[in-house]
Amino acid sequence: MNSIRILGIDPGLRITGFGIIEKTGNRIQYLTSGCIKSGEGELPERLKVILLSLREVIHSNQPQQVAVEKVFVNVNPQSTLLLGQARGAAICAAVLEALPVAEYTALQVKQAVVGNGHAAKEQVQEMVKRLLNLPGVPSPDAADALACAICHAHGGQGLGGFATAGYRVKNGRLV
Image (cartoon, rainbow, N blue to C red; front, side):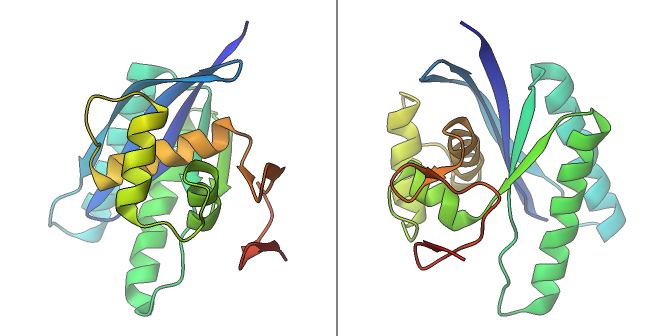
């Protein structure tokens, strides 16, 4: 049976979470996860840290597909722009390695992993721990990245098993 290695990324300017799982048939297995801390320097240097660190993760673990969480619009537009740039650096790391990138909203990820698109971070962490049979609860950023990879492994399944990848979902409905 063919297996596929998926890198999930939860982009952030301060902390970018990553998680790698392997899917074989209907089974998913945890491989590794962690966080990339970009420091407190100037923006271009911080983006460089994200880009180079994710390329190193890709080289070390050889994923075949990448799943990235989409940016949500914040109350603070400046924060949204900065997060978008961190997300761009993460996507560039994958594209530079010729890897296909799928994007999922937080709602889609939570729906696929917890069954509730408005689940709390702690619920996501606990479900990731259970689904991947981990000995402990992963950090919030690593858990979000692993959840993104799990969502992708399930084909972006949400809304009761209907594939929502590539669609916009609002209040549990496709729009």
